[in-house]
Length: 244
Ligand code: SF4
Image 1 (cartoon, rainbow, N blue to C red):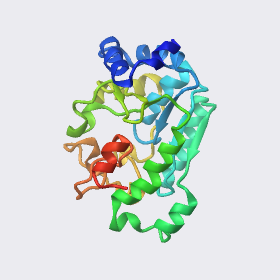
Image 2: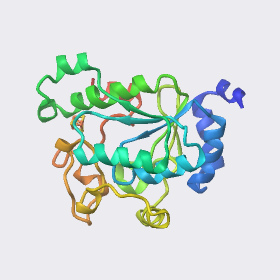
Image 3: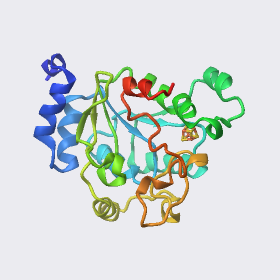
Image 4: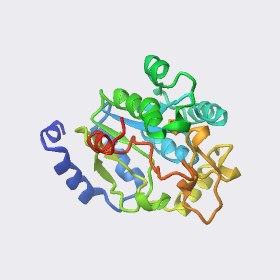
């Protein structure tokens, strides 16, 4: 439906949310991946729950571009798990997104920027690389869920990413139990850290284990006010927040 591109993103978001809210993730993904074939990418951290959405997408369209943001600060376990998952699921277009070497040389030569300024470190290693990688796409898919934290509790199925792209969160309304049941039903491989108290897994220096009574994302930047790396802020909001 090419005419859809002539409708403003916010209007498309409202229309798609009316159509899709409350549907099964697969029933949302199937028409979306067909309608936006080649123009929609899945962004994945290959973290604790990532394989659920990767599996759904692999079942529908294994050639969907998958953008894996490798900040070069990931756990070694994530890097080896990523290779395992790609092989098991048969994904054919996984793109490793790296920071710009020149920007890292100038901004984080020692690899210690995360100790002094997490926002700038995330901007260099995650936000800017993803913004560049998303340029050819009209839409992207994320695995975010409302239950993960209070800051995600109101998240809609479809969002405007603030850069004229659609953002789809097909698992937005899934609970922890839904995710666990899907893992069991499809016998999916688990991230080695997920059973060691890491329900959300990002970069090694900024991810800590948590006790079961806390939000899944409580171990991310634990002890700091920061709750998001910035890739889910609109570029405009990210700039206004004072981050680079
Ligand atoms: Fe840097 Fe930590 Fe952000 Fe990773 S999560 S990019 S190490 S501040």
